[in-house]
Image (cartoon, rainbow, N blue to C red):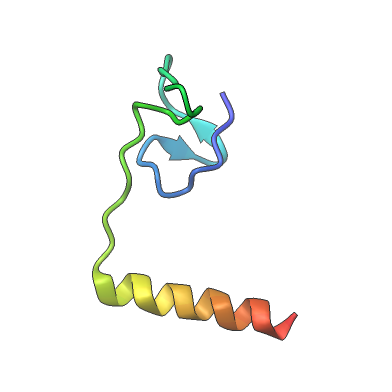
Length: 56
């Protein structure tokens, strides 16, 4: 199954590693577990992404 949530621990190369998932009423995967990033790392990466988008 395709998965584009790169922060989910079950996503690898655009695919879900689970055999089955449950989707809630909003269409969100209930099996999703997000990677926890240190606050400084997350802030730095977000700024890098904004800077890249501003260049375009």
